[in-house]
Amino acid sequence: MGKISETDLILNKDGSVYHLNLLPHQIADTIIAVGDPNRVDQVSQHFTEIEFEMNKREFITHTGKFNNKRITVISTGIGTDNIEIFLTELDALVNVDLKTREPKTKKKKLRIIRVGTSGAIQEDIPTGTFIASDYAIGFDNLMQFYSLPQTDYEKMLANNIQQHTQLSFTPYVVKGSESLLKTFSSAHGFKIGNTITAPGFYAPQGRTVRIETKYPKLLEELTYFHHAESNFWLTNFEMETAGYYALGRMLQHECISLNAIIANRVKNQFAKNAHQVVDDLIVKTLNLL
Image 1: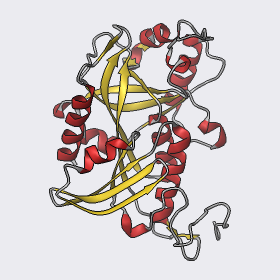
Image 2 (image 1 turned 90 degrees about the vertical axis):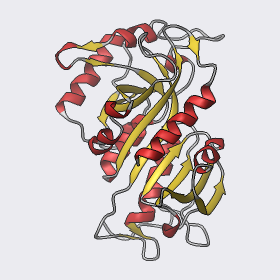
Image 3 (image 1 turned 135 degrees about the vertical axis):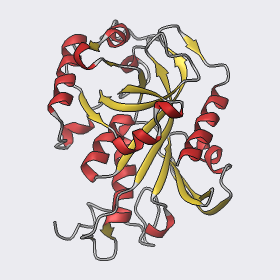
Image 4 (image 1 turned 30 degrees about the vertical axis):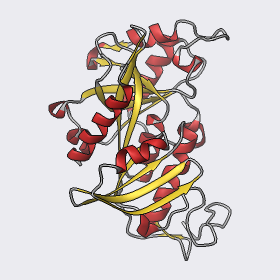
């Protein structure tokens, strides 16, 4: 691959990447990603020092230290479209020479940990649970524009989910980082789950307010989906994980999604202490890095 054009990779006047407004030395190799910009402070308040801050659109960045480990926390906003911007520009920061616009010969691998909120779709997953996503199931269309390599098992699951739910499209299925899943394991208080990434908060997650949904039994069908041979169940809904896992695979970064369960969709229960649940997950994450 040769020189990357000025319109394929847009840089600001100071040489920083366009949306994140960051330069390579301003990020750590370990990055915590949060959806809500207000959650950046909720993470960095635990740092012993903050060396750098940047605010640009919904992308807020703090880089500092926790237990002498350099960590960056960045907010992404909601949805896999934002995750594409986030991961593409992060990768450019470490794997593209921004002055020559040429990919570096030696590639750097980032560790990217999503810390977010989610709703459980199994009755036996109470609010307050922490889920580490093993597989992500993408209901969004981002991978229609990429050639995502998938295993036979992932393709089989995708086809089975489509047939079971009678969706008019086939989702994509992709596994997260095996090494990070060992860090955030059941031994450390995480439930290992399989996460559905939806392209919306309401109908794509089986919610109805004033508009009837095309798939009125979607939540029920996803709750009862089961691949018996591998004992594969779907555990929760959110809106970014599949984007992390798919792009992470293609860009060769280690990505894991950690989910604070603040709602149980089957029981129609919402956590009364949602902020504390998220803060507990943040502290646990920082201590395990």
